[in-house]
Image: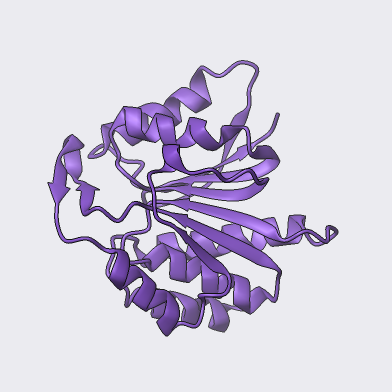
Length: 206
C-alpha cells in the first residue's frame, strides 16, 4: 500500500469518534497488510476480529485497508454496545449506547458487506473461525483483557497477530496481561513485533 492511500485511510478513520491516535491507526493498517500478505497463497477469506468497537474508528481503518488491498476478508466487530467503557486507572464510565452510531459509520464508508457486527460480549460470542489478526480493545481491567484473549486464543495459529490497545501505565490491566503473555508463558508463545504509542502488536510463534 502506498503512502498516499495509507494517509487517506487514516484521514477518514480519524473522523470517527474514538481514542486511536493517527500513528496507531497506521500500525493497524500495517497489520492488515501483513496478514494479507501471509494469506495470499490461500483461497479462504481472511478473518479479522475486533473486541471493542465503540463508534468504529479502528474498525473503519481496518475495513478500508482491506478494500484498498483488494483482499477477500471478513472483519468481525464484537461489542455489546451497552455504553460501558474503560478509563484510566481502571475507572469504568457509563455513557450512551453506541450501536446505532457504529452501524451508521460502517454504512457511510460502504463497508457493511465485509464488516460483521457481533452485538455481544466477547465471552458470549461463538466464532469458530481461524483468526489472522485480533484487536483487543474492550474493558481494560485485567480480568476483562484476560477473558477476551483466552476466549479466542484457540482460534489463533502460528503467525497470527494480536494487537492490544492502551498498553501504558494508565491502564494497568492491559500492561499486566500483556507482560504476562510475554514473560510467563512457557514455552515462549508470543513475541512483540511492533508498537506505536499505546498500541502493541504481538505475534504467535508457537
